[in-house]
Every structure is written in C-alpha cells, then in structure tokens.
Image (cartoon, one colour):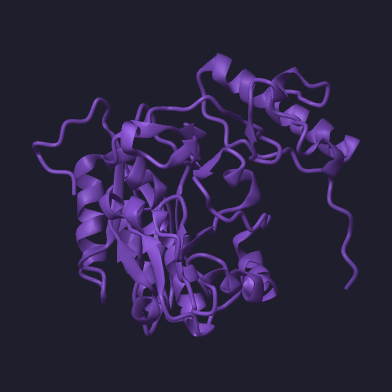
Length: 327
C-alpha cells in the first residue's frame, strides 16, 4: 500500500489488483465502492463477481490507499494481490465499478477459485518446478502474448482468448497426460499477473487433475525478482498498458501497439505494407474492412489533433448515423 514514505516520481499512483473471494451479493458492494472512488478522485475499472474482484485504479497515493483499505475489508480480501506503478498522467478517463458473472472470463462460472485453486509457487522456486521432467508447463495467455515471450519448454495452447482454454485442454488432455509415462504428471501454469493461471488451476482441479501449480504474482513478479542470469524466461512479456512489453527488471521492452487490434507490433512489422500507425498491422489487416480502417484513420487523426492542442481525447471512433431500429 502507498504510504507517506512512498517515493513516486509522479503524483499518479496506479494499482492493479485481483482477488478470488466469495461474495454472496456483489451488487451490494458496487455502489459504496463507486462512491468512495468518486469521492477520492480515483479512476479506472473494477469488476465484481461472486468469485471476487479484479481491476486497475489510478489516482493520488492517498486516494488509492483509501480505496484499497475499503477493498481489504471485503470478505476474503485482506491479502489481496496488488501491483503498484507510477504514471506521468492519469491513464483513465473515468471510474467504472461493474458487476459481472466472472472477474476474468473463462466461461466456467461454476468454478470456485477462492477455495479450489492449485498451489502457489513463489518466483524463487519456479525454476526448480518447471525444470522437473515430471512437470508439464502450460502458458495460459492468449496467442499474441505468447509470441512476445514465454518460459523455456512451455506448452503454447495457441488460444486467441482465455475462454478458449477449457476446450483446448479437454481436447489435448489425453496427449498431455501421457507425458507422465503412466502416472499423472504435475502441471504448472503461468500468466502475466497471476489471475488467469490461478483460475486455470481451479479448472484443472475440477477436471480431476491432482497436482496443479501456478506462479504467484505471474510473469511480472518473476521478472521483477529473479536475476536475469538465473532466469528461464525467453523474450519479453506483453502487458496491457502503455509500456506494451517489459523485460527483466520490468524494463520497458521493444514492442509498440497496434491501436486497431491491440496486438503487439515489432520494428519489422512497422516496415510492412500492411502497417499504418493507428490503423492496421500485419496481424489484423485482413480482419478489417476498408470502412473500419477509414474509421480508425479518423480516430488517429483526432487523437493527434487533440495532442497538438493539449487536450484529452477519449479515443472513440466517431459513430456513423444510426439507422432506425425495427420495433
């Protein structure tokens, strides 16, 4: 938690958090949390569900601390996982507290990660686990994230979204389990910050897998705490913020972002005929129409104009005139 002694280069404190917990009535928690955030000038997004809370907020260190105190007082949230960073300016336009069926969408709402997740493994113990020949290591992230970097020897499910993971595992389970040579192998899973791999272990446990483990704090905690010379991480780690990717020591990486599809872009991608800043990249060009690209191009023009004039721009595409709806 930020304190009076916290040293920040900027006045904006950013807190990314999640906790699998048991909320009987998440809707009852929404309004008080929204009111507290608004009263303290906090912006960002928080998701509430019966399985817990997830989101990122930003504001003054004092305001963020008040919100976190409130969240820690919620059921099962005293030990909530929080990652702090600093921002040169407010990264969010507004504050939204929403109630969802899941705090990270897997399409398996009946899971109970708060009580049935696998075993946490601290970053300093992770190398030994994934180096064990009796361990299968699975990356639970999306395909475009894995392309940026992954742990040595990890299985890449090549799934476009996290909700595709259950179907992939059920289809590949027999082949994966055969790696144990007659006995069920250990399964170690990881993701960016911990939330997806934690939920994945609960899913595998519900499928009858006995020994499942997940990296505590995710890749980011590993890159922050494990020295590069001892690391089994290869490449960079995609992150869902303005840094795009990070390396060891959480130093900013070499990737930029396609603002049309939100995928990472390499320097080589930027030389492609299909790359246009703010409009398209080689990965998404064939997925979009000329009309969509024209809309992105106008959005990018408006963003540049706003930046030149020193004003904020939400980044929304100017909507076309809506056709009358059938009634």
